[in-house]
Image (tube, rainbow over all chains, first blue to last red):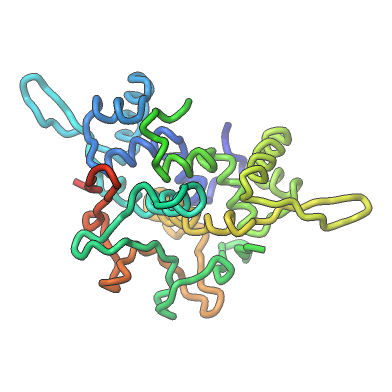
Length: 153
Length: 153
């Protein structure tokens, strides 16, 4: 399944081409939570070893994870986020927040808080000029060839 | 491929279970941009008709899209976002922003701006108490059973 020919210049399609696999995102969630080792991730996700090895190799090839030696004899490696990988935090938070709102019974299972003060965090689409959160209906999408509008109705 | 048994109470896994399919997200991107009709989406994505019909049915079953009659004779329908679907805007923006930063040559192909003032929008993880953006390393992830930490190193 490949996106169509109009997809070449779309950043959403580009991102999905790199991390648009459910397992890859669950692996990244684990690494964000501090599960850095193959056996821990494998056990946590209940994923087949060959599938996990395949996805980890792909994430390293795409420079989202890097393999770091943590034991010399025997040689043991763990998986760490690169700057490019760490930059996926807003995406993972967006996935979590939506699941909290629409697919959680009662209290959200996990809460993200600000390390410094313990306050639950929020994810905002913000306008730096107006200094205010922006609702979906207030978003306009522009590209070089045409003017498109994001509509929510 | 099913997530493992530890996934039951994770909102990220729950979200991926609903919209963790690449085509579903590309269809939603199209609807956000104002492509509401089957033929337009099909042509834009270059997706097989049966695959598109299948994904649209699933998105309606999951109450993310709704079918709206726009022509009575002959009966014609278009696809509109529900409130639950519109609430995916931050997720789509997170996908776009990451693609812009890491998988775009030069200028981002599409820019999202505030409808009122035309300023390019930003996506922030924010602490309402400290009134400041939060970096990935400043995020702590808590759950009821254990205390986990989101780590970026």
